[in-house]
Image (cartoon, rainbow, N blue to C red):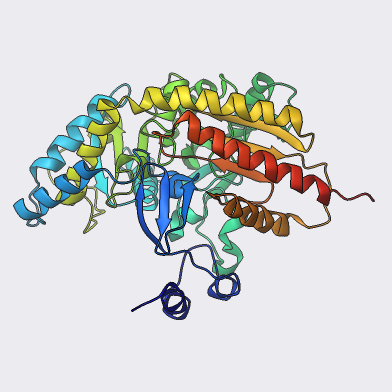
Length: 451
């Protein structure tokens, strides 16, 4: 009989896991090997159960264990597992139609992919190709925000130049990457004293960068509506309308990365719905299929897509798994569940309850500097002015270990604790999460440096 220790040994001998080294895992008696899951609870092969507070990679929007997805996948596999070149399938056509119906404005033309990194790679290529088709061959530069994350493949890995990507090992990066300020009201790069002031200053930074880098060389601006990589950073209300105006004025394509924020995560169907604008290109993955099957998509406005219309005017970016009929069928059922179970509204209501609980927690713990988020993309940030007897890297590892001891699987980065549970999370489960956070913060206070 194969034991948990046997499987862990095999994992640490053969498996190259994401974001964790096998030597560290072996030392800590890991990896945890998950056997089954339902809702937001996951159980390992030894019967230990935790709450998955990150919701996979902020991606299991409908929760674990939905039989309807399995049934849809099996039916499609038995019906048609793949398709001949230069044809399409029923689920692909229906998914494209559904995405066009759900998205704002004249976003109508869908390019299927198999994940978020691919989606953003295609969006960048699409923006650059769009300018070429219109005669602006010199537009190749891309503006992203400092610290943002838009994927792990080579091109998009450099967007935001996240400190957690280890990009120094892959130099040189692609040309034309420009980095703007994050519109973070808690820690505004330009000293804004309110969300509105920070929004205006950070939007102006984007305009200044366009001017400094010559407008006729800038192809696109890309950003998440709410920045997930830095812990649910919500910009002031005017930020995105200002960015829309700036992009329009200088002819820059506006790309909205909805890989994390989309499909109910922020309490609306899409994160950009909070700000009332239509981007030129929108990218999806994660919540599009709730990570049951790899799936993603890019949707463009008719203005962008029409630049590729006409005889032999092809956008060359074929992906073998893009538009896979099984993935499309899974995504269609996932969207159906989100709508049928009212999970967008659930996210808004549960998220507000979560935020209120976290604010109460902050009132009891002076080491909490900020509580923020929308829907079920929320974060708690430990005050950067508080010094501990362990450094930030050690602090993050300590927090993860303590959360695990208290029944939470919750990965943190530095001092930011971001939480993105499945949209079906209950108030009772939120109470359990907050209770574990409460006791952990109480214990953490004993590590405050006295010096």
